[in-house]
Structure formats: C-alpha cells, structure tokens
Image (cartoon, rainbow, N blue to C red; front, side, top):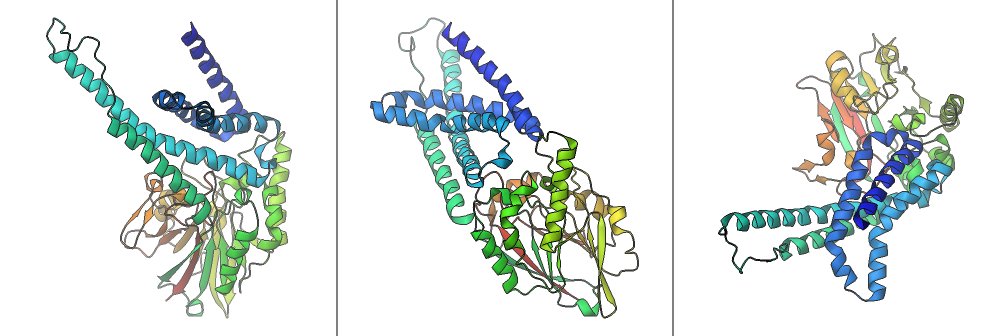
Length: 443
C-alpha cells in the first residue's frame, strides 16, 4: 500500500510539474520529459546510496539527506515562486547561483548514475548467467544467494560524481569571467584597399540577466577599448528574459568605443519569447524598450537592414538580420532579402546573424556574395576541450559550425562563431572560455 501511494504521489508531482513549467517557462515545455527522466535518475541514485547514508550518525544522516535532495527542492521552489513572481524580476545573483547549484549537482549525479547503472547491468547479467548454468535442482550454494554490485564500479561512480562536481564548481568560481581575446587575420580578395587592416571586435551572448554585478563587464569594456578597434559588432542575446535586465549595465556598455561605431543585432533571447507576458502589448513594450536602450547606448541596431561604411569613396556593407534559427525552438524573424537590399554594388559584405545555423542552411547556399558572417548563439556549450590541435564540445553535435572560423568549401566565404562573452544556465565555463574576438581584415 505504501509503494502504491508513493507511485501516485510521484505521478501527481509529474503532472503538477508539467503545468508549472508551462506557466513559468513556456519555451521549455518540450524539455519536460528530460526533467522527468532526471527525477527518475535522482530516485534511482538515492536508492543506491541511502543505505550508506542511513547507517551514519543522526547529524550526518540528516545533513547528507538534506544536501542530496536540496537541488530538487530548489527546482520546486523555482517553479512555485516563478509562477508568482517571474524569474526576470528576481535578484540576478540569487537566480544565477540557484540555477548553478542545480546544474552542477545534477551533472555530478548523472556521472555517478552511469557507473551505478553499469554495475546493475553487470549484476543482472551475473544473475542470468548463474540462473542459466545451475542445475534444475537448486543447490544450497545458490539458494538465497545475493549478487551484489561491483564495489569498484560503485566507488568509481561516487568518485567521478565528486570530481565532476569539483570541476563544475571551479568553472563557476575561476573560469566564468576568464575572458580570452582571440585574434583572427582574415584575407579577402574583394577587400577595398582603404579597409586593409580594418580591426573588428566581436562580442556576443552577454546574457546580462546572468551577471550579478557590472565589474566583470567593465573588464570586457577595458579589453575592447585597449585594442582601439575600428568597428565593434555585438551579435545578439543581450539579455535572458526581458530588456530590464540590461538597465543596470547601461552606463558600462556606453563606455565601449570604436572609430566607426558599434553595431548590434538581436538574438533569440532578446524578443521576450521566454516570458509569459500578460498581453501582446506588454511583450511589444518590452521590445520597444530594447530598441530605446540601443538608441541610448549609441549603438546601431540593425533590424533586417544594412549600413554602408564609406571611407574616401570606398565602401563596405554591414548587414544585420534578426534572429533566424534552423531549430524549431528558435524564431525565424530574419529577412535576409530585406536586409541585403541596396548593397548589390558594394564589393564586400559583412553579415551579422546570431544563429550559425542560418549560415549553414541559407547563407552559404544562396548568398555567395556575403564574404563574412559573424555569429554566436552556441556558447561553445560553455564546456569542452580546446588545444592547438584538438577541439571538442557537445555543441558540435547540435551545430556544424559551433566555435571559431569556418570556410564554405574552397570559396572565399566565411563564418566566425563567437564562443559567447557571457553565460546562461550554468554560471561557469570549463575548457571553452568566454570570448572577445579581434578580426583583422587583410587584402
């Protein structure tokens, strides 16, 4: 009877959780089955370690139980409170590190579960083997015999979970603001002589709603200004949920300077699509605030349009499209035909497009005249391995172009994917550091 009640309670929690996610995070409803699986794995791991925990002294037992279930409690609190007060109105520090604790804890648990699951598979195979090979008449040797898990695998699971937790914690405390300035020299035969040596700084995916203070952003601004760029391009995702997240950083962003100006486009997070607004008018007001913010910053926001940079009669077209993503989760507001209009006689065209899947699926196939596209969006997954000879990240299984410079076969057409200057979700970086890109155009 007790187990039946537990199953019923579990199903009720799943149903209530679905409606909570639908209310608080409408864009993440499609991910809800993943959260259910996560909960099942949580229960599985608990059943694997609870005997060890319950054998401890009272204080240790209570503390260990509390710490184990704390991430799940935080998720429940997140859903409940966000239904009353949307997360965009929460304190940035509380919101960011609550997400961080939940993320690194469950990532660590998943590694532990992998080893424990393998141990259970071995246990099951051992049971089948013993059952199949023993004689029909049971012998006392196997009667009631217990087949335990491999202690090695169990210990490896717990150790790996601890190592992963420590690594993700270091990513939060050490590498999240360890900005890396990457230098790229790009040779283009169509580059007008007057633009030879043009220095472009690209930043992307600031996600200011994740930043607890403006101090790290001031460091970004100083790095940019110290390079004395000709142009600065921001390739989208200024905020997480709503424009108001950027207001506390406005004065800092104003300090970015470039000889020929700062240009920007919108990313998928900048439209307010991840919030349940009370009305369409409220959502539009949020977007108008975004436009107004860029005007106050003095940045040129390109909304499916272009701007011609003319120096001594030689011209370069800077084209900016709104977000266009191949994945159905991301909006397709980009209108490249509209954005490129009027640039036919410009020899060199640079496009700002937030999502690199736009380049892969549209630009390189239909617009060979666009020599360089600058994108972001992937963050390099904020996790991976990068050396001089090797580059890997889970991002590569979702995006063909996910970090760095890519060429369209042997054609003189490129896309550069910035690894993101900020972060979202997990407030840290491991292996894939936050990036500021300096691209120098050469003829």
